[in-house]
Image 1: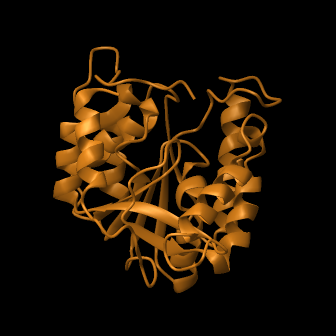
Image 2: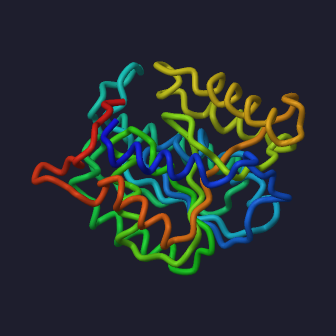
Length: 261
């Protein structure tokens, strides 16, 4: 882990000495959800999205790539058929979560999102113009596309608060949302992603993390909770900059490490 990223991790981990706070419910909408790939939105924030939808909040899901670089499934990776299959899975998952608007697919290069940060920023600026809260992977997520997504979010210049969700690494979350009442919806949505589930059991992994998170918020470890790193837009931009996520090289790679998953 580069020194700059360690500094950001330490800054986030020491913000509160009392541990994460259980929110009475999701923040007020309208809501923008940024998913670098089809399934990220459900893995990291599916239960909270379902609670937003049940409350009647407007929810817009922007999917940066179509996940065409996925391996392990029955369809050859990199093919148009695979991209179409993953988009169909995402549409079905969003319906399961109660989202009434169809997801917006940007169809940017999977695994090389750093080459298309400005394009994604433009889409976010358009789709999130009225959002009061944005869900995105945490700034500490090691996946190269997830880091690029955070850079694009900063460049979009939205004024909404950012709730960073967990996908590829646990994070020093400071707020939790009880998703017990909608857990069945999240699990159903996750099972839509048959392509990704062929290589990783995200249903089991998400359940384990949500059960663990419920142990630290008064639910006694017998419920389900999703954790988030909650940042105002200025602090999010500062941490993204400090972590070096805005420093792109000529081939589209960030200055920090990359993860090919």
